[in-house]
Image (cartoon, rainbow, N blue to C red; front, top):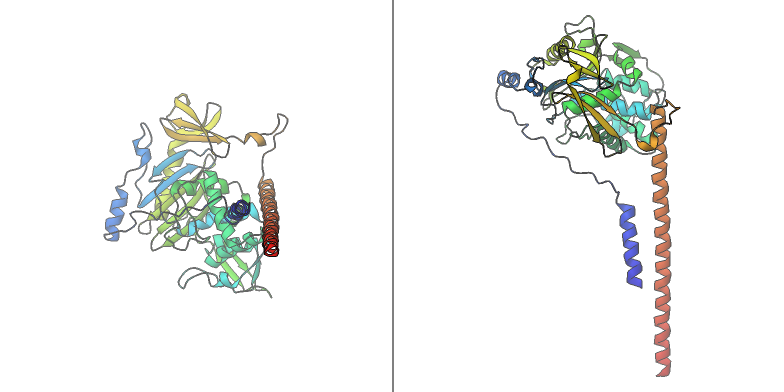
Length: 436
């Protein structure tokens, strides 16, 4: 009897102490060692083949100076240009695009952000920062401005730490949420270990995954408001140092050599291992495109992005096919579009629209349990999404409390059973002694 109770108690302790979702060890990026001069590496990148070049009757795209690049239509998900789009690369500071998305989904602009000692000293010497000090207090909007404009690494850390804290968790919860949302959106080849993109062998992404994240971020008008801010001075207060912030993406500055008028948002990145990275959203009035270039050699990330966007705007059109909006080459016929339906692990159905095998549009249905009635046009907003996750989190907490209560009862019952057994044994020994 006692062994049985012990086994039950041990099983319950395992369930309580170990989470059901185990984090898999991140695989390091293969083939990152590089040999050759910068010119040789540049020339090698220019000769790399592109996936879209193999599609029959597809417009020929420009050669780029980086190892990976993509152009995706933000509204349909159509891929207009692809070069090693699923190759793992280090993102550097364009990581902050995902940091902003998680912040928008889980906080308000007026939320308070307090700089901790861990935050102040999270940035190694030589990396970008704006001089925030322990105890400084600013708003979430100001912290995101410092993150997106000035690429301040301690500001990005503070966003993750404070959003996590406000959600009843911590900085690590924010990191887990970054990875969860990336996978939920369809980004299956990324792993993030920080909020700012400081180099780590296990911190990587792909061009496709960053474009997918960007599509979701485009749903937030406040992102464009922040990104289009060219400069902002935040005066010193009793609780914060003065902050002077400038937009670091030169494609947004009308006076800059690399200015490109259709660009409406962007984020730069650089580390020695990642080389130059660039995330860009551009709109010419007909299409809104996301361009991502990764591991770009030399100072070519702006030039490559501009040539990719110009190629896309010039060679593609939006049209209707099979009852959905798609993006096709200008000379292509909508009659050549086919579709495939894919059932997703989370219960949704995705319809992919294909032109000669290339993705030209995608549409995901709602979960069956969340499908609105015929009279309802309601859809989930960021606020309702936060409430749903809050309820889910509360439900998990209740379950853990219930498991803990059951465990306590089992241990108490076990202890009582053991105590009763000891008393019976002691009684038997006394009776035997008495008979002697």
